[in-house]
Length: 278
Image 1 (cartoon, rainbow, N blue to C red):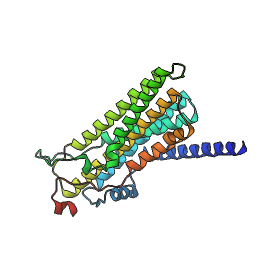
Image 2 (cartoon, one colour):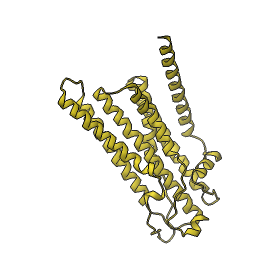
Image 3 (cartoon, rainbow, N blue to C red):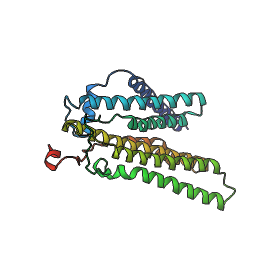
Image 4 (tube, rainbow, N blue to C red):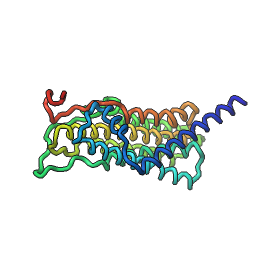
């Protein structure tokens, strides 16, 4: 019993420490300049040379994304503080707020401005140019899991009416999960097809890197939010086990963050092979 109590205390302490770190980071993100280290981290993820021409472009991207992520986290925390629905669920919703803010941020990023004469690259862009296979399949796989859980639990509720399954909540989480997944895929498509005006090669390279990072973040955040809906489904169906709870509550956001920050050198379809390698 003592070992169990120690484990619970350790878990709660770690959870509080993680939450405190998120809050401090969020508070700092709402104000203050983007540090040189943040710019260098972004450039390193995409093997992108930072120049005088594209430096401000990268800074603007980092400032926008961190502001919206912090806003989502703090808003979620405020709602949960009012609702007061328990520490673990509160932590889940705080993380969900961060990922939701991340999705909004990627759609709010300013892209390259138009030149004096309207012109845009006509090169065909493909999602594989900006996202690895894991990122391309993350959201569809999560939506598939959501639908499978809904089907399995619906069959179980039909064949065994004595099961204490909240069918209404199960349906709500299913609709929410599928909706989030579809909106995420539509957002990725929007980012992919966003016009790319003609500009200097270094600015085009930064635009490609930003486009790639947006799609990575959308994949990681979308997957995480859909799998949180799966957690809601299993809770409504009374089918949660401790390993499943740990996997979805803690492992899920870790996987989403790893995917969001996965290093990737985007293909540059608007350039020839020699220029792209330069």
